[in-house]
Image (cartoon, rainbow, N blue to C red; front, side):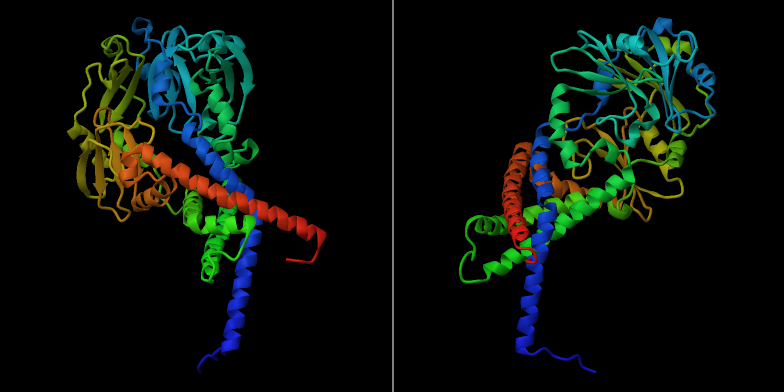
Length: 489
């Protein structure tokens, strides 16, 4: 049976009705989300200059004084025994805690603890005096002031800080207004922030990510809020972009005047950029877990280490052979072999009678997916489309291990230290293009010329602000008229 065919007049009526609904949909979706879109574009520009506070590895090491090797009395294995570990920890580091060396231990469950390397006793919890004393050893310390305890604040809101809670905050009294966040349980430095970071992030990342502490502390709720807001804004942008071209099909360039004409023409010129930014931002929230994990799971890490028991064969003689000036020694197993890595002014490298070769790293890497053939090993000596970093802290060279599993998993490994730097599968590599390439324009020639990339982002953001800002003005005027004449759409 054939479907009934629309007459010419019925077809025109349907098109007119669809245009009307498109117009109404764009108007009210824009009214609901217009202010958020303005805030996203404006805060994104701030984020180009000031990123969200984070403690980099370089900052962590720079805050540590040289290791007093002569004061170390406990071997790594004795420290694990004193801590009551049933398995080898995720990280075992020997470094100074104030005036004495300590073993900093991160368990497989993420829980952190510290044991004095001089006495073997658990380190006492921080109070105001001990927090100030620890902070006073920081190179930037001038006039140290304890700011009191905190369990969760704006800068430690995410779950990755949970294992180290609660904290004490300490101000260093330097010109930059640096504040340190220290774990009460261990005294470990978990974050440093400057006055510039704290002030500008309120109108930068906090606004852009809707990073309000009570909301962000509930990760599932926060994700839903951001997904719904950005999704509604995306629908408004798509409908406006479509409507803008419908209006262009008339004889005149634009049938509007004033703010409406500006909104129309700017929307046609910048609508694709707005849709792109909103879509990639929405995808960054990993809706429904579409994109795979970026880190190896516990089973992969155990298999890579080749040793899970809380044992380590090297003793105090190995510690004594650490390079002069070392600030930290990391103890690990890689492919069933013990490894000590020293960090100091000369960089980070194996030491103390242990060695690591690229061949040994690859052999251990095969264990990450032991039932899957290793398809290719590539030495990456320069950044490429999938190994890149906008912040200039990219480890090079690295080894890329590509496995022949259904997900097409890759691992990036540091041949110097054996560290597992990343894990990605096909979905993660797709996310590289759907988020990084579209949202930060970090791809192709723009990735190699940061000045061009930032300039283009500023130009597109300014265009987006023009569209969203004029839309907010029009929406406000519509609401005012509607308030005076109820019942009108």
